[in-house]
Image 1 (tube, rainbow, N blue to C red):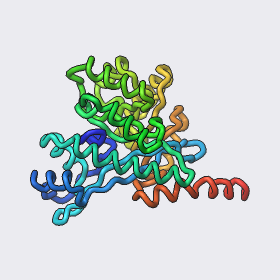
Image 2 (image 1 turned 90 degrees about the vertical axis):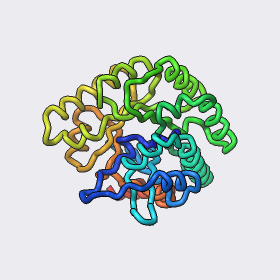
Image 3 (image 1 turned 180 degrees about the vertical axis):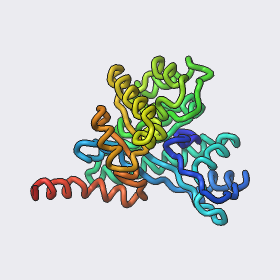
Image 4 (image 1 turned 120 degrees about the vertical axis):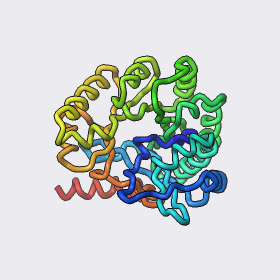
Length: 287
């Protein structure tokens, strides 16, 4: 989510555009939704260890249900939010929801990191690291549970500023992830200069692996590069079991996508985290 830590990434929060013409909401609609929260909600897509099928983290995704236009794709909403300069209010709205969810989950014995998408402008907002850390500490939550996923078009105009802000976030214990890894040559330049802990392979490459030999080779190369740089790697856009098997075959161990789980409403996500260990234990016992 571009609006602040919620600069919903063009890939992560990406939904495919409808086949029929889509009536774009007005600027006034967007302004009202951001400031009132009407129609906006956060859903959670689990990220899995591809071997054990255990949830290791999740990504917070923004959804907007417009009273006239219905479900508005993030690919429509986020550019409007950025153009209107509303990324910080949106960030504030989403982060509050994620922290509330993490608190509720932890009170019931659950503990899973959640990634929130942040534009470069959001990350470089003065005092952002202190603000996030204070909110997590006030909620009695460790900062490691809130992953900051940087999601915006490159190149970076002020690399020094971005590097300093990312290092401050990392010093306070926030994991840092780079979205859309491999989507452009500028990504590599940033990766080598910035203190990321994790990279996410652009879902477009993952979806084309079975039918496009070039995509398969690119994914294999990106996985190898991430391993050499000692970076965690997440594949997004896994839509069937054959792609999942192919990823395991070339050394990718963490992923998300419809083949594993669709984005879930808050209550379902919490319930899944609380019941899954029991279900897995029963399955193993039956085997």
